[in-house]
Image (cartoon, rainbow, N blue to C red; front, side, top):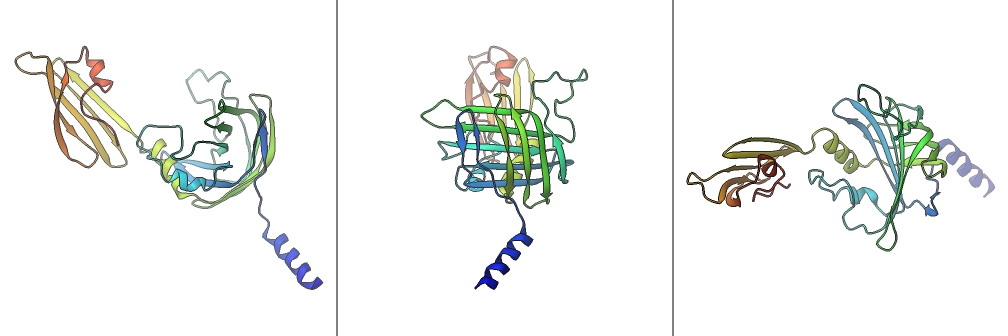
Length: 263
């Protein structure tokens, strides 16, 4: 019996691996229940390792229910409360990555605050009964032990948040293809829109993940009060509708046509 116990200890020591640490920010404690990792590239060439630790069960499944083309950047379907710790590193290699203060002055050439490679750590908590808590790291380091493209990622962090909270611990995220798909869609092939206008027409189209929606509207030849629009939805189906004459070309661009430019 003692030999068996010793063998199990040796096996576990050889396996290694990290677990997710509970953290507290502004009085809110996140006790991890699930995690998700996305290790890959965005914009086709920028390496990214992102790990999300949360008290929401099956966070990867929740990401799978998000429409990346909807234009919404907040909220998870069917999730009304929870806390998340998000760690993102602009690299897929092991090593130490410094956190940059997002409020620090930007460079004169308008470059991003985050240097490459670098790290971002964010804490968020929301519920239907309390005010949301949002915080971001302004200094510190994220260390990646292991990160495998299309696989899991693990490491540790020691950061100071904007609120003054000190968060320190280990993280491990299992591969979540839904999260990687979401990051890739939002950052590289996300919702891209084009608009053109003349005195008697306006054309608006948006493309995301191979689907295009559009509104092509024109003024009536008799100078009436309503413009006619030809609409194309994400399935390629065509419909027509009438809209009130836009007060300016910009009002037409801002989606006041009767065509729903949604995915």
